[in-house]
Amino acid sequence: MINKRVLCLDVGDRRIGVAISDELGVTARGLFTLKRTNIKSDTDKIIETIRENDCSHVIIGLPLNLSGTDSVQTEKVRSFAEKLGNKLVSNAMQEIALELYDERYSTVIAEQTMKEIGIKRKKITETIDQQAAVVILQDWLLCFGNK
Image 1 (cartoon, rainbow, N blue to C red):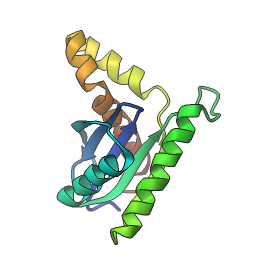
Image 2: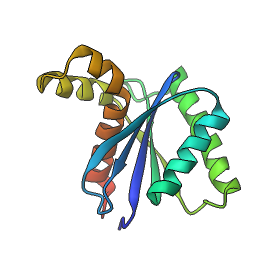
Image 3: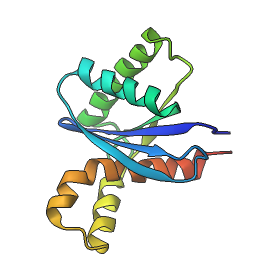
Image 4: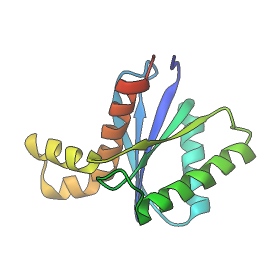
């Protein structure tokens, strides 16, 4: 049972989309898009966000190929997750559950949804990463939240 917020990351080479759940684990909303600089700064900002929002879980979207196999980007995300996990331990936050979750189609779904409700191309480009994180988190919450 989730009784704290869940943070979700859509990790890319240039940006990380960040979404968060409500405390009941029912809804997800975009929080911000982090422009990547380096692994230390990126993970420091994620740790700060976990603390500020009292999160119990961090879900990281895993970009598998359509066939379900790993890609180059999959390995980059696994490496990022490992480094974030190590940083959680070194910050005495090992109780935070860290999970990789299949993110296939999340960006496509996010973009299509934003187009359907009339959001302009520029705004879609600016927020697509955090909206993809919302899609990933909402799916995770439907499958695993409060079970």
